[in-house]
Image (cartoon, rainbow, N blue to C red; front, side):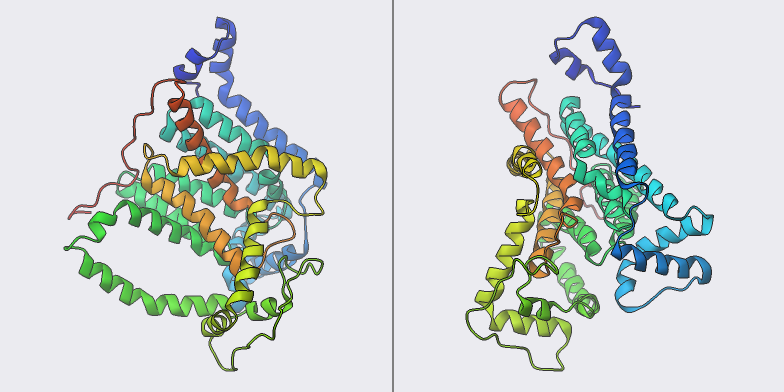
Length: 410
């Protein structure tokens, strides 16, 4: 189990007996919090929670389990999750197996989250506090009880964060790539995880990539990847009617109480265009309307709150999440921590926000929850920076970059 480092013990005015007890049971306390939350969720929901989207996942998973049949078109974008569900159906565990498996993966992800932050900051108080927030914040655990993609997607992002901090050799990089690809297959927007890793690695290696020796090869890779990206984007957008969503002025999906109506007639794309060109045409010919719509969706996404939330829920968000945003901003600029990891965390949040601005916000917080651990991780880095700045313990010694520096033999 996790051990409480001497750094925390030396800063806490506890008796010898209390110190020994904490040192012995530190990991068990976090484990107990995880278990308590999962039991509370199962009690609250009366077991696995089945909602509208769960139906197609179960139907798809049944086809995989019984016939090894994989669908095409829209459901292909979710192939990873029905495949996961099919394993439990084949074992005869049904939705209970699916949900309990999600809870176990979430527990492993929480352990990895703690280990990554402890590695980066060297402060058990910071790593333990951030992990307790991850486990104790209701929304980040609630979806573990649902037959939905978000629980595994959230855990996958956390595991990629952990693997990034440990990617110091070839096997570490292979592990990171496999986790990123597995996470990418869970949802249509799953591509943001490997893309964020590329952004993080690219920013860390930017001097080498933009150097005279590597620049021609980089240009060749970009040119070769362009047609692949074009095909993939058209496939992703094929069954998403974004232009029709814009015409309805939807800010929250299927929620008609909040819509934006254009002040002048909108210019529609001509028939026969590919999905990417169709979307691009609409955006370029209606820039003011699309910008307003995007800003409203993005603002609502990051605000976390909706008008139909309870006062207690809104107050908790204001008192907990908003300070985390500020700490995350501090952590994103903390140069003593690995720039590749910080860039990855920021990229995950930014890409998810951009996707919501491009598509539509959810009536609940399903789209924000997967990136909350990234915000919590950045907030932990910010807290560690402030603790060092105000003299709470020695200044943090910078860790080497998580990824090895590129070399001719890499």
